[in-house]
Length: 155
Image (cartoon, rainbow, N blue to C red; front, side):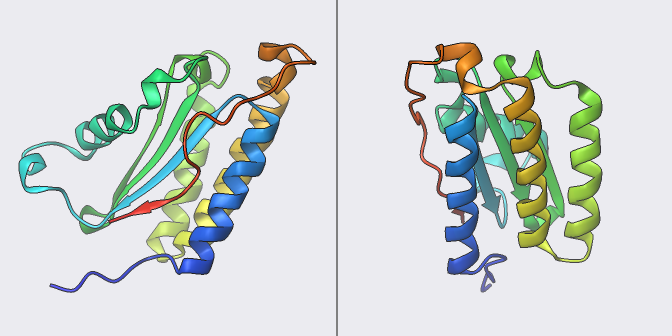
């Protein structure tokens, strides 16, 4: 079966650049993974369990400040998961993630993946910049190192 990419190369590039810009202003490390279907070994797992595995395998639990955020999309099951590590959870309430999930659901239900991701990432970046700016964790004179790649994974 042929899998059709849900994002163009240009959209992948733009989203990756957007993540890079967000990460310059906050210690967060954001990854987006688009999976068209579960791997054979994951067939009995829920989308949440698959996302949790992906979170760990991408090294997102190893960031210095525990500030990983994963947007995981499982296309074949029309599901997505938003996962955040401890450093993010303590500053962003559940209501924020519920709101983002609702907006993503609305866009994704119309197959508007790019716009949904773009606007949601912008909103995540905005709140992170206000609640978890770089200088608050690293001190104003220290650098904010990009710990994880910013590319979007689509498989």
